[in-house]
Figure: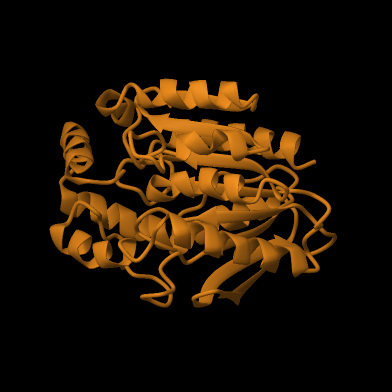
Length: 291
């Protein structure tokens, strides 16, 4: 998960590339607003809207995007610790162009409406971290499950969603664990989960996500950053053991040469080649499990 140690890794990487934080933030500012992700082959025309989803704790502002025609498998996309923002809307739109009804959620709706950072702001900035952490602390395993149920209900009731097909869920950084918790809480509805550089997936706590594998009936992709694996090399083995014991299909891989946060295109540690490979594996998972 994002912390000062992972940020030091990122700072060292940027310096090795000859980039100062200021230089890099200029690039991120442009990327977060106008960057184009690789095009989708045979892309569907999509409809985008800002929507409000009723949850047990209030109204969650979310971004919904889906193909204009037909009904499709629904997907809940959880942003990383920096919250909902243009990069995740672009990612949601890209997935919708591949034939899914995607709900990109604001996990911080209890404490903030909309975006909580400005384009180009970095988690490596202490002032940004100080601003973000109260929002992050408003979340818990319990809010993940209650919110996740509300998001599933919203998708199931939408005309663009085929409720006879199972739901997919995907999470980044701190929300990587949400994919496991959602799948365990709603095994009948969640058919696929994808965690990208997820934090805290296998811990020694009694409520560790990996201990929930026996409650899951879904295929999984768990894409691990190389520096996260270096810090916690036992986690992947615990995940593998738990998923195997549960008889689940799970692709668990450490992505070579990656730093925590490598997937979002506006991330400090974005690795385009490996992000694309992980995205491709996710598409294969969703096509197989949500068919």
